[in-house]
Image (cartoon, rainbow, N blue to C red):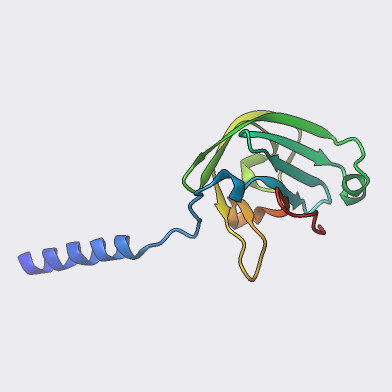
Length: 153
């Protein structure tokens, strides 16, 4: 019985140790600054601009056309962000979709502190991503960083 308990304990430890984070550690703020965009299923466009000085701007447009033409957004929000390894926290984030669910839009959004946001570095398959919630596809794709020109949406 004692050997079985030790075997179970060792198995659990091995399972925990073998789990790896999918997020990338941020070694330099220059890696993540830039403009990130998310398109809602209903057509709205949400834009996040991360700045070198740890401020952000959050813009929500009625549709892709308004975004492309730089028309007045439905909502504008600004504040600061913090970084912890690969995690980002936004202070006073405008919660346009409830529970990080893009199908659950709040037309009178409130501000919250938004944590558990992860940065995923670009690779051969995608540009850099801010992951708010993978399960609901609430993922922002980088369209511009501090050293590149704007990409298409």
